[in-house]
Figure 1 (cartoon, one colour):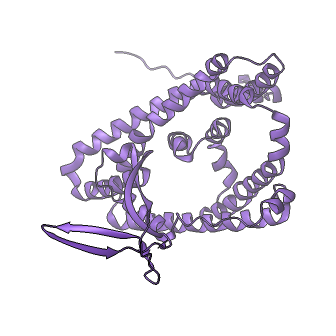
Figure 2 (spheres, helix red, strand yellow):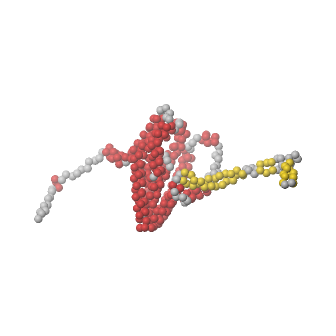
Figure 3 (cartoon, rainbow, N blue to C red):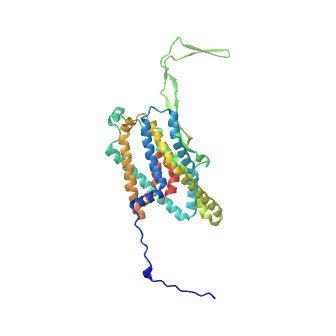
Length: 377
């Protein structure tokens, strides 16, 4: 039979464990290590800018050399474009399949209200900043005079194009093309004659079978003013129809969520697909510092006269940057704080990696959907 022995120790023999305060340098290094991708991305932006400025002082580089320098950045852009479609599809389906129809409708309504309100705020802010800062050269505007109104673009056509793209006729085609209305102008000339005066020596002889008839032909023909006939036709242009894909897969996810257990296998498939694509995006982020540095360096080298461009676009750049700071640093955090009742800057810091990547590549917003979905807190 085993004996149980009870051991008691006096608390006076125990020494308290005191946490040594971590130095500021150590804390800073830990933050850098935790956000290594972000740190390398910011470093890539600075290295690309500095390298581009230094290489400009060398004798003009051949176009092939500039292309080779910017080639890694082109590869980065192509990889980001490649992941847009699978990530949008998988994230929409997995997100909406877990919600009921009522929650999906409420979420869609809030998203639409948020989108419209922020768009109106951004438009008003842009108009105010342009009126205050006056970007551009006023002398050039005075010399150009009154601008010509573009009649080819109609608000009705633009609205109908939006609706047409929302309901694509071919889902596969919408992955690389979108539809738009183009106006084709035909010029129709109609000639007519003035029969007031005739020439006696101008005769036209028309012989039909055995009958010969003399017809007087007018000599002073005039041309009527041309008539312009506008016809609309649907044409396809290159570019992914993101709106149509989102519309289809939103409906796909909502219907799949209503099916319950019947669609469990399909839901598992999209969940796995979403995780795979997210891991691919994270792997690409480790390559992004190199691609961003090469892309910025190539763009700076390819500018013909940097000083002239800076003078021409200086105030425009100031206007855009001030607008982005006010809109992204004041209005959007204020909306987040009013609705969510939390610190907005902690949320936005989670998206800082995507912002830096968008700043370094200066590309369209849909290319960075994978990054925002990956780094959203």
